[in-house]
Image (cartoon, rainbow, N blue to C red; front, side, top):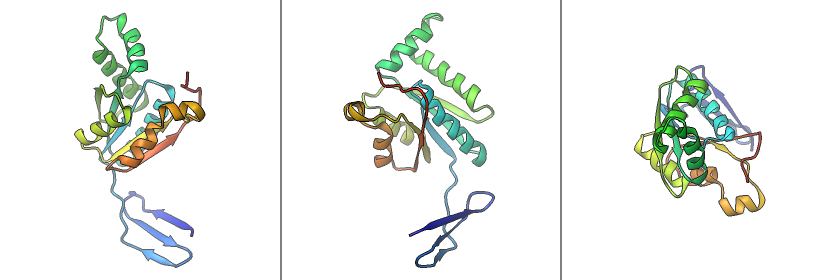
Length: 178
């Protein structure tokens, strides 16, 4: 079965054509996101997810919620970042998220959330519900083998259990696996 999609200029109405059965659904609509959640783990790969979310937000007029779930790797990076300014981890995280938004999503309305959850996927899903987002854009870290088996895929867990659509952005670049 081959699916072809054609979107109008404003990205709202879609016409879907199924080649094999020639089924036309003229009134199929896609909801335009109003608020997009972007999980950031302070890695360059997660920032590629922010770049993609910023592109979507610009095209649709949506706002962004940048979320950082602080676990051990993020805590270490934020403690180092905040040490010079004598900042606590929460404040260092918020400052870092604001800087990322300023650099990579200029002019887009954004809010910033720092959370502490043992499971990053659960923290992200909780933030999505709390902040009434209607789309999650998460970067895939491309883990494989033993690392994936041990850590699992946060993006996959989010996609399987989220109540809103999830866009997984495949990323390229230096691995974050240790």
